[in-house]
Image (tube, rainbow, N blue to C red; front, side):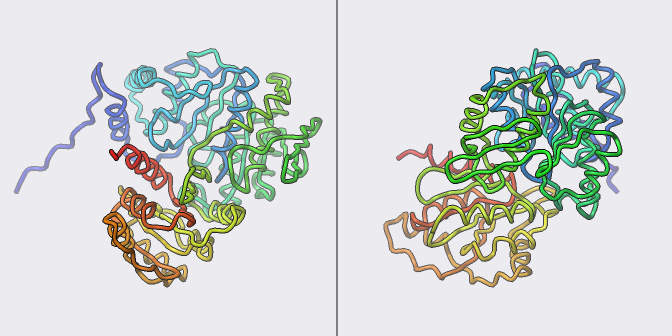
Length: 465
């Protein structure tokens, strides 16, 4: 019998360690990738002895929180404030998660912050998850800079999320719907209570969900938060040219529509303006900065329409709530003969409900696998499509792409079809080359799918010839 192989301890990067080496190390230092709770993080935070400066906004929500963060950042930068923003996950580079005045922080600065957290973690013999460790590092980095505002996006839930270790001056809950039920609870009421955990007594609590769970309202009232509810304390109105915001004591008229596309963006925009109204004594913002902020805001992967033909739409949505809004946004785009969907989802997401929401808007499904412990294979996706009632025939889009590349004649596809691919990059290359220029391509289902499609697009652009 072979002796048991001793478990190898993770090796901390040396003085010349790269950011990728550090990130690999951080993935291995805790027994679970997700381990809800604030106790471990607070032990290390006390050892590091730092606090955030500036007005702190904490943003939670099932969908819309990233877009809301981006709008807040854009408006505050236009108003001349120095702003730190922390979001997750990233699409391509880890540095996307930490920005100061819209610029990603340098890798060297992040590594220095990692070393600071690692020393405190070692001194206190505390184990941290990847997200806890990186959240502490970014927060410490922000604390070393004189910032007027800090925007923190919740990673998962709210009450026990790492960003909730830091007190907020204004909490925002954008929406509450079913996602991450294994960690947050089985229904909207339990999930809403988790998200409301970012509220603070006496501080503004902005709720952008038009129909929030009662648990959100009850928790705000129980702790004495200053509850701002959509349709009661703030609202919006508009026509095709412009829109207006109305708050408790402030109106903003003749506003430009946010540069971010999608049917839900005015809800997010009005929640952002309510948040700014609630702290206007500390961060006054002129009307022109609001207009410019909305015009210039960028947030990749959120109903992002790429230039050129065929039309390509990137959307990181990954739950039924997001799929329902995506359906509306697709309907508002005008006519396309056929819609193709490059589609992949993680195994813990409700693929059947997502497909149900989009089934009659998608003509051709192009299924891609996602790797890792939470990944879902194309075989599993086919089963999910069947459960959702998709019975479209298979079609060789790969063969069509190859025929076109050789100058041959492609086969006529059926009205509807399904095909599986080995990777997102293969699917993106095939579909963008094989479909007619007037068709529409939707890349959807996960941050991973969108990120890999963006990388595939860049690889195609760099090909010689």
